[in-house]
Image 1 (cartoon, one colour):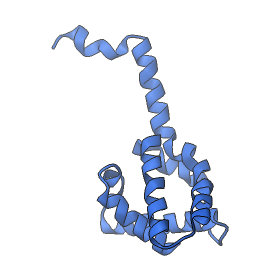
Image 2 (cartoon, rainbow, N blue to C red):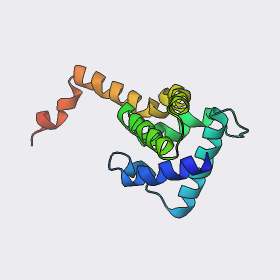
Image 3 (cartoon, rainbow, N blue to C red):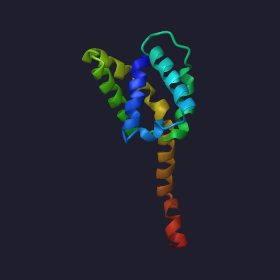
Image 4 (cartoon, rainbow, N blue to C red):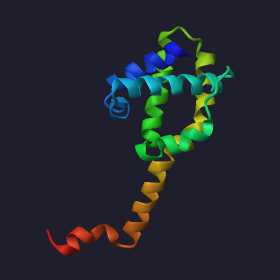
Length: 132
């Protein structure tokens, strides 16, 4: 799991779609990798002291959309494939990670809903009403 997280993090930094979420200072990167390893270990049935209740508040302000979540799953799939993990086990791993999607993307979802409501109320046009 540690190698998977390490390789996933490296690939996420190389991917323009996900890079901005992972570019952090060295101390922060170390902490993120440690927590990700603990989380994935627990999700895969191993011993872990990661509290899954931390997922939502940790990711809320990051503006992670379903698109970005899917990009990370694609990266994980590639990392597992590169490591020689059987396709069946890789699919199972991705299925295990799917249920946390809502916790990771909630902040984005809430902001999109607020924006949609503002559009319906005409609040998105303030700039035009005030003049360019």
